[in-house]
Image: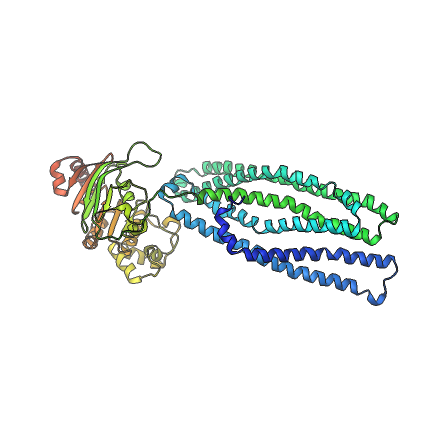
Length: 581
C-alpha cells in the first residue's frame, strides 16, 4: 500500500500536521455525538422516576444545544483541515504530473493518447483527492466511532444485549472484502473507457474541418455513440455493484435494530434495563449505523484511489530516453553530423543512414527531398526531441549529448510543419518564448514575416484571439505567424521546416527578401520542396531514402544534373504553366 502512494509521500509528510489536527478534531466530533444519547438517557429516566422538576427542565435542552454547537464548530474545523488539504493534494499532484509529462520525450506522446492523459489529469486525480479527503474521514468514523459506541453500549448499558446486537456486524466486513476487489477492477475499467471517450471527443473537435468536408458527421456520431455507450455500460456495472453493496450493508445494520427492539423491550419489561437505557441503546445503534455504512463507503473510495494512483504511477514512473547533462557550455555553434544512423523506437529500418554534414556557424543550409526521406527527422534529432547515439552529432566540436537539452533547444527557433498556434491572442502567440511582451519586437518580426498588414486589418489587430490551433486563420497566415514567433525568440539557429508551402510565390519572394537580412546574423536550416526557397542559400543537401545523395550550392547541383536538377526543371515548367493559366 505504501509503495502504491510513493509519489505523494513527500506531500503527505509536509502536510501531516494538518491531517493529525484534522483527525483529532474529527475524533472530538465523534466523542460529542456519543454524549447526546447519555443526555436522552438521563432525561428519560428522570421522567420515568418522576424526578424531573419544572425548574431544571431547561438543563437537558441546553446541554443538547451546547453539544450541537460544539459538533458544528468541530465539523467546520475538520473540513478545513482535511478536505482543504485533499484539494491541495490534487493541486500539487496535478502540477507534478503536468511538469513530469512536459519533461518526457516526443516518443512518449507518440505512444500515449491525448484523451488518456486528460483522463489521468482529471478523474484519476479527483479519485486520489477523495481517498485522502472524505476517505480519511470515513475511515476514522468507521474505526473510532464504532469502537467507542460498542464500548459504551457494553460497559455503560447492557453487555449481553450489545453482543447480541453486534452478531450481524461481521457480515459487513465479509461483504466489504468481497465487493472491494471487484470495485477496484471495475473502476479501472471505467477510467479506461472514459479515456477512450475523451480521446474520441478531442479528435472530433480538433478534426471538425475534415469531418465536415467529408460529410462524415453521422458516421462520426455513430462512432462516438459506440464509445459513449461503452463508457455508460462500464459505469453501470460499477453502479450495479454499489447498488448491491450499500443496501446489503444497510440491511445488516438494520438487523441489529430489530434484535434490540425484540430483545431489549423484553429486558425493559423485566426491569433488567431502564427505559432511559433502552432509549440510549437505540440512539447508539442509530449512531453505529453510519460507521457501519462508512466501512462500505471507505472501501469504495480507497479502492478508487488505489486504482487511480496505480494509473498515475505508470505516468510518473515513465522516463525520458533523452540523456540530459548540464556540464558543458557552447564555445561556438558549428554543427556537424558524423556517420549518423537513426531508427525510431520499436522500428527496424533506419530513417537516416550515414549522414555526414557540416553547417558552419553563420551559414545557411537548405534541405530538399521527397516526402518521407528523413528531412524533419534530422531537425528533430538536432533539437533533442529524440535520443541519438553518442558521437553522431556535434555542436561546437563537442558531442551534443554533453549539453543539456534545455541549453541545446534555447539555441533554436523552430517553425515546424504543423504550425501549431495556441488559443490566445496573436500577440501572445508571437511572444510565446518570452514572459515579458516586447510590442516593438512583435511588430518588427511580423513585418519581416510579411504578416503585419494582414494582422492590422483584423478588427482587434494583434489582440485578435485565435481559435483552437488558429482555426480562424488561413494556412499561409499561420505559417507566417509561426515564422514571426521563431524570429521573436532571436535564436542563434533558425529552422524553417517546409514553412512556406502555403504561401503564394509573390509573398514568398517578399518574405525571403526580408528574411535574408535576418539570416546573415545567424545559422539557418531551411527545409523546403520549393527550389525557389533554397537557391540563394550557402549550401543545399538533397536527401533521398534517408541518405544525402547530393550536396552543394544551387549552381553546383544544377551541373550534377541529378535529383535536384530534375526537381528544378519540373518546378520551372509548373511556374510557366501557372503564369499562362
